[in-house]
Length: 138
Image 1 (cartoon, rainbow, N blue to C red):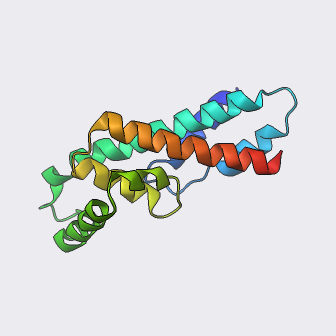
Image 2 (tube, helix red, strand yellow):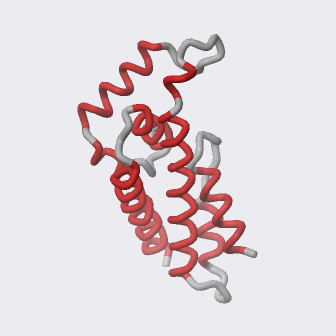
């Protein structure tokens, strides 16, 4: 049950919802009945798949740009796309960062970053983050 809870918490925290999964991961890491490497994998996969939702949303974002409820102006969207293009797709390695990580994945979708490249870069970044987090605590 703990693995499922960690998966969904990690998944949701990688979407545009304001959540975090680190506290739950660290809490579970002190349970001797749970396997640390499994916690690491579950959190990494859940968080990466949540980022994929942002990529998918971004890939459909241009369909809604002219709607009144659209959350950003065309100028804001263009600025975000400019910065993503300026720093390149390798910036997705930092998709785990608070505040900028979720929009980074969304912008990658709007710019039609190839999904496999997106997935690999985000997975590397997120698994590395969880690895170091667990390493520092244990």
